[in-house]
Amino acid sequence: MITIVDYKAGNLTSVKRALDHLGIANQISADPDLVRKADRIIFPGVGAAGAAMDVLKERNLDSALKESFRRGAPILGICIGCQIILSRSEEGDTPGLDLIEGVCSKFEPEDEALKVPHMGWNAVDVHRPHPILQHLKPGDEFYFVHSYYPQPVNPETIYATSNYGLTFPAAIGVDNLFAVQFHAEKSGPIGLHLLKNFSSWRP
Image (cartoon, rainbow, N blue to C red; front, side, top):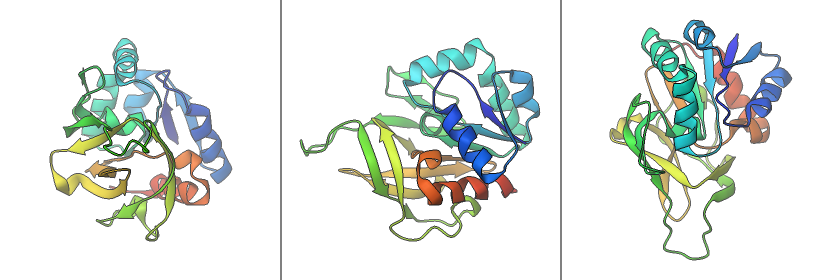
């Protein structure tokens, strides 16, 4: 059973529909006790880092996620769930969950033709193998919607990158935690393949 964390950050139903389509048992929950005991966790989200962290704290989901990480439950972060697992976000200078040391930085492209937020399909290049990225091919594209991007301190936590005026991490991870900046649940068959890989991943 995959528990999808509900912290008012949107795109929960899109993730649930994708898992339902794959026939993978799942539930949406805002209950920190369920998150603490979950077999697997998807930590999705769209929106602002500050508001997301406020709701996580209000619902005690921040501590639940940290406990689940420490006990080794497989966790997949998506979009803002990839950003606030870092130490800090430049969006409102917001402290994150600090599960991976690093900062979430704002896109500031020198090319005026590049609009922020970065929105649309972009190729993702895998630099280090990971079971969740298994069978991805060079040039496979995923759907992005974001104004900020993750910058982990340790380059060994970066598994894949994309480019939008600059090359930025598109997939990061450590131990039982993996996170993607793109929306796997909105990325068609290749995104579904990634979610299926997560459902059987054993860190």
